[in-house]
Amino acid sequence: MPDRGQPGTFVQAGGAGDPRQCRHDDFPTGPDPGPPGGSVATALAEQRGDLVTALALVDSGPRLDAFISDGFVGELLFVPVAGQLLWRFRTDGLLLRGLATAFSRPGYRIPPELVEDVRGLTYHSLTTTSKAADAYLRQRTLPDRLAVLGKPLLVIFGQDDRRWRSASAAGYRTVPGATVELLPGAGHSPMLEDPARTAASLLAFATAHDAPPDAAAG
View 1 (cartoon, helix red, strand yellow):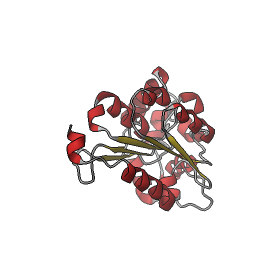
View 2 (cartoon, rainbow, N blue to C red):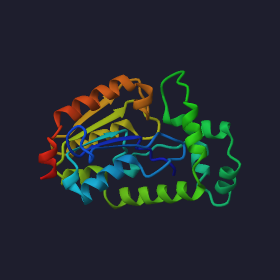
View 3 (spheres, rainbow, N blue to C red):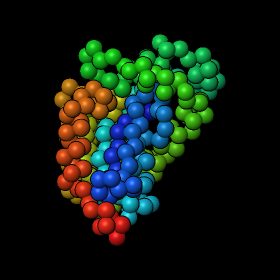
């Protein structure tokens, strides 16, 4: 199942300007352009906790059973042979249909740059990363992984997400000190559908947990 879309993950690993501070953005796609950001950020915190000060996840599905659907096109892509042929002859119309469930705001126009990004993917990268992402969540849910890390956590979820059940965001409340925000009127891609509200939450969180570079370096 493509995407499992974790479209925006912020990993703060030091103060402003610190070279170890990074932003990982997996734009929401019918087929995901890379490993889901929430899983990437969590894996980084698990393996190199010394580099991570705080994490903010945007529409990151906490567990596989919270997934809804990528739509007909997204599911068909993973059917042997048929999926490969479909990907080989992909058109803008087909890609737009695959991207449709990533947005819920009425009248939202999918950016053409996003379509081009998806077009540049190989079928191998699409299927391999998706399977690996599924295996990561199947092994252990994101809330379970995050609960033992002791890192400040912000979770932002579009209330009208059509790919992950927004009610599943409550699962992150098992992480000590986690803040969970649901954005009304936004779908799976609040950073694109409602950038102002999403940015305000991310900036406030980043500022609150902005560790001095020396402290982050230990």
